[in-house]
Length: 281
Length: 183
Image (tube, rainbow over all chains, first blue to last red; front, side, top):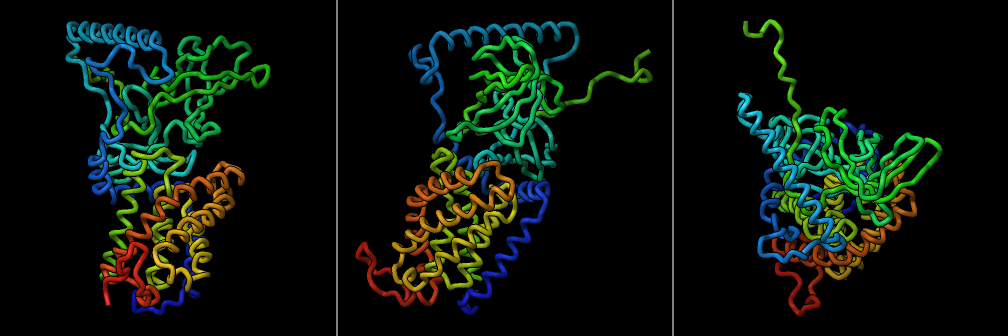
């Protein structure tokens, strides 16, 4: 290349024409190409991901931390309430799993899914796609839900051999059936951002009356094959009535964007109901 | 072969910085487009065709990894490269300082164009919002462009990739050191 003439006057139109021709590539193909590019770059990105891991992690609660050390804006009473509920549910979960094991249904199973690291997370506003270091070779499929700490994070939109792309909940193209945890109203959650570019989803509901409240949890319905039911999505921050039968709720996604390093790609299993012919006689 | 090796290494380094390192340290609004800054800064140091091809390769990388439509950012990168190359002689004479300025100004040109191209290519923003983001990217490029310009000037001089225009520049740089280390 250095021996080539330095006059770029003829090269520029050629490159511009190539770029314009690339605009004709369908978006689905672009996502597939992105997954393959991430697959090729995966070893390098994974290495640097591991090298920078923990450099900017949020402080975690420790036994030595004072009781009042809560994140800014979160009241202590609410944190205590959540801790109590979490402990209660963990106890109940353990008790039910022990009852299952005692009844002869084996040991509690490990979470169904593929553990993956987030190796890329850059993108234009509202259309950010995250890259994971697990792909079709590891069992990741398009449409699978991505979970982080029990919360729904997003959905797999394209898969390469050893990498995949995730559209997070705040992606403008993402639609997900969702349910309000307390009043049980169901609607469709749509990704988006507020005026400052922070992740903020909208939940649209069709109902004459809605007894939702600010702070109420939004969870998955279980009707979406890629997600387990009652998986936490976020909290309601505002309610608006659009018309007689239509409501729009602002939902703050639960996950801290910059702190996520590893996720689990949900892999639903087929129901373990034996065919009649296979039953023991 | 040496040109291909060095530019491929920079291309990979840009991908790593953009995808893995910067998102850890900077919020989205303050993240610079390192690929664009590196490409525009390289125009001042590389031979003309090589510089343009490198900008094109970086544009394809950005499109592949970040853009909703393949080619949208590449068009804007090339548009900015064309605008930045218009004052080519001054750009080469100015060395890293004018490469820094070119990276910041070119970022504004590229994302100003992307406000229109992106709206056509599938972004869900309005043009005014696109220009707001162009200002954000330009502010971020003031930092990234400086790092890219001075680091690439040293790297290209060290690896012998400087173009003929940059090679003729012999005066000491603004830190008092000889800018070019090779004959």
